[in-house]
Length: 140
Image (cartoon, rainbow, N blue to C red; front, side, top):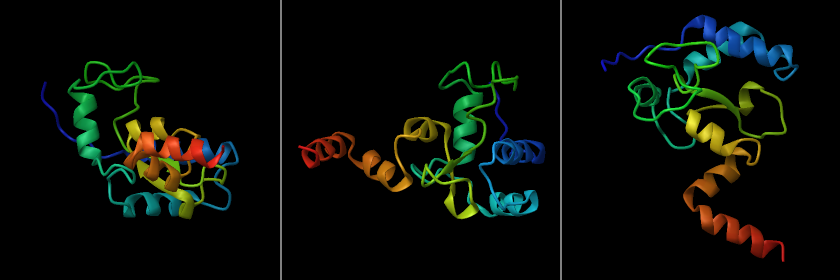
């Protein structure tokens, strides 16, 4: 299957912004500020370093498959995950303020979930079993 990288369109950036704004999760941020922040970011996962182009190629060429990914190379409702880097909160309990947002790939975003803050997830990523065992030993 042929593949051509497509940067995230403005309507998708705006949809990300509005979804968080409507839920009250991005206080005191206007769309133009959010868009400027997004456009100024290097398009690579904060946690693992995977570039957006690499994410998109994995998804669009079917190297990995999920019902959440575009099907047969076409975006569909509920099937747009993995195409572009996602916006994650560094401190999961805080809102989506610009200094609390990072870009991350679909894989890290799902792995991090709401279980880890950004720093803890980086530590977990580096040594998963060690991190979990330290957690157990600290809480004996």
